[in-house]
Length: 136
Picture 1 (cartoon, rainbow, N blue to C red):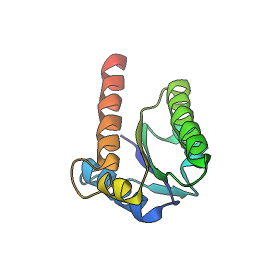
Picture 2: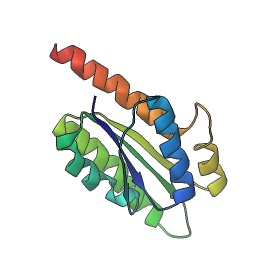
Picture 3: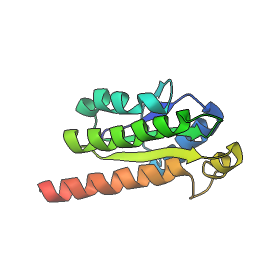
């Protein structure tokens, strides 16, 4: 299985923990991590990487601010990643935190099984196994 992690640098302290969670889920398997500016860029990065990987794990953190920018970034990231996954028929684990506060984001990126990076990696692996089973 050729898997990669795509990670948004914006809110990097949170995102680094998501990457660690995804790596924990993958165990000993070493996977490349592609760092990009933020969650808004995740769909394009996933599309560009989809041809060379069997599955992707997209992680990022969008924390609500004082403007509606949060809503636009969340919409683009979630809809775009889903669209790439369907069009390219590649499992993409969705590990993008959308939180109202830094504290909420930190809780969702903690070093435990509730880490969204960990959950996204597990989902990507499950979907990759399903795809392989269907194609047998």
